[in-house]
Length: 585
View 1 (cartoon, rainbow, N blue to C red):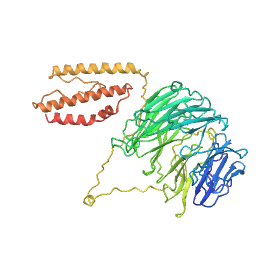
View 2 (view 1 turned 45 degrees about the vertical axis):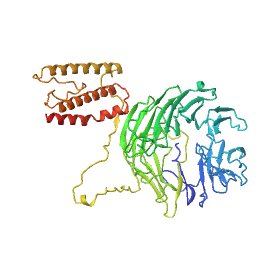
View 3 (view 1 turned 135 degrees about the vertical axis):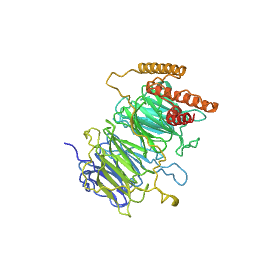
View 4 (view 1 turned 90 degrees about the horizontal axis):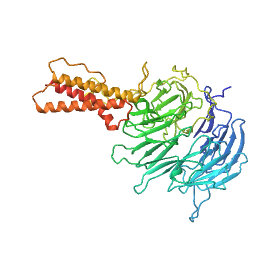
């Protein structure tokens, strides 16, 4: 029997309470509403069976299954809570304070045993960023960054440091998901002209650079984000600078790197210039999606060879979200965009729906892989707070708007372990809903007074690119290998060149037809009598021939540089210019 859809905890000025998930959406009796505005934080355990919250006086833990209060800790200032993967430990953090005389403050990071309620260990953790220790999936090891080195504890024994990973100024680290062997990715920022680097190690082999599984160094990295895939076979690294020295982007500069545990590494070539907004792994660990480029942004799925598999074209988007089962992808434009979403079936690369969630500040997939939560929360937006529950086909199943004098601060789904909800067949027909659909308000473009009585002309600031499958399309015959395809292209190009030379020698004879794959013969080689025009025609033909050669290289699977891709995009304009010159001959 499948469990009911997960409930949603909601924290705001109206208090903290739970709402049942689809299809009922009534207030849950599992948790008695905590009234007042003092609730600062809540957290579920990874499997969703335990729920902890802080109400400004105490931090409480209840068992969601039997509604029993397990423990209550006197922590009035706690603002961060997190459970270990096996529900053994509750980690709490409160702001670090020092006494007036300048002496060191008391430890502000506590680790509590969930079974007994005793405090196992307290640490001083000054920064809120990366405050929580990282556990392996089985809690065999736990790690935290202390004074630019990573300390490892084993079997939740925090009185003894089992291992240390010491490198000069470790900035950040990320433990791999999944079972043994455990791996860790560490980042060391560059200094004094030296590059930054990311290294992958297998625990506990920390002997030196030669014991690393993989290493990748790069310049231009003020900040680094590391993303493991689910199978812990590779890491995606987003390296970004705070300032773009070329002045091309307000967001600084970003580059995307791929590092595998087998030692392979590469720069992911993104065809469009501009910032990298989001990068996400599919749960299959075999592909990832990147959203990048100046608006309208591109979104592309890449395989483990960093080759593009499918290009979703351009659109107003800055985020990507794979469903828990990995078969549906949502591309969305939140923040300073209007909230347009595109829901894609990534098995068949078909568009399912295009809903609009205006003013959304939060998005989350339900663990069942069918429902979506979008919310408008304070302090990001203090007006029109509320949340919506969607079906991925675009139907709004439930909508809640808080009163004008109230706010929502946090809302999420109760988590469930993988495999609890099986994947279902994708449907393209919108599911029925009792919530009336709202047509998004279309803002009309401003027109100056001089143009208001004149007909509207359809002009676009940007040419939109349609989605396209980047996989090589195999025909009915057996597809050629890369080498055979390359040789075939060379043979056709040589044949076309001979035919062109033959037509040049006998201008009176009719021109010989050229195969489609050969460089275009853009017209008869006639002279105008004007040396300047002849020179321009010759140069244009030379450029077009170079473009054809680049297209042949792309067809053989070669990765082109950005400037080469820009040359190919100019082909249409060059052909038009050549045609205009020849018509004037």
